[in-house]
Image (tube, rainbow, N blue to C red; front, side, top):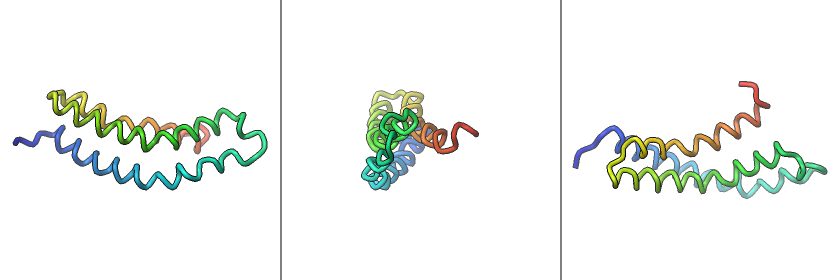
Length: 102
């Protein structure tokens, strides 16, 4: 078995995304608290942040599955791209928390 950069990257990212998904479960459980304030259920920014938080563990699992499936069909570029999927949720959450000021 040969270890390519894509395989090592996918293995390391799978471990990181698994740990991140497990640790983010507490945040997912606290997401309904975002909607406690009056009018927050109509606020698009709060809804976007809540969706980003709630979908993060699912996207992590999807990224792990896509990256290993891509390695199975020998598509290393797709494996690396699939591994980077959860970064979209992270960028959205950081962008909302920082009010779009990077």
